[in-house]
Image 1 (cartoon, helix red, strand yellow):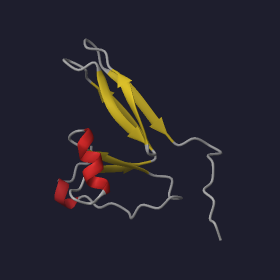
Image 2 (cartoon, one colour):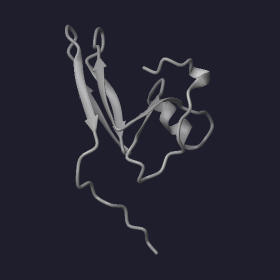
Image 3 (cartoon, one colour):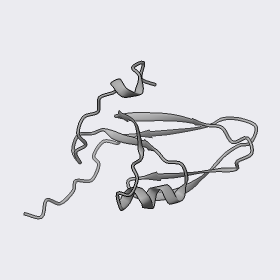
Image 4 (tube, one colour):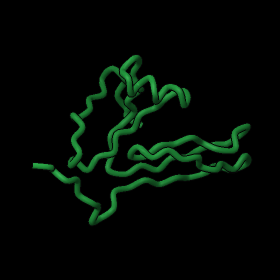
Length: 99
């Protein structure tokens, strides 16, 4: 996590070709739809080329995640941490410019 306080963090403007992941936190599933229609905002946590998440299940048996617009339920172990790595891969597909 960033050593600076939340108010001191500075993020680069997101671009499709910047090679960075935008990491946001949301409270619940409905939060995403409210963000999309700009009623509320998501918490911008970080920008990174790769991220490793440690998810702790406890009373929960799955985490609700979304990457690049694709949601999924990730299974969690109730007794041990679940680690999830998300990183940029070489030779990723390119977006079509349309010009």
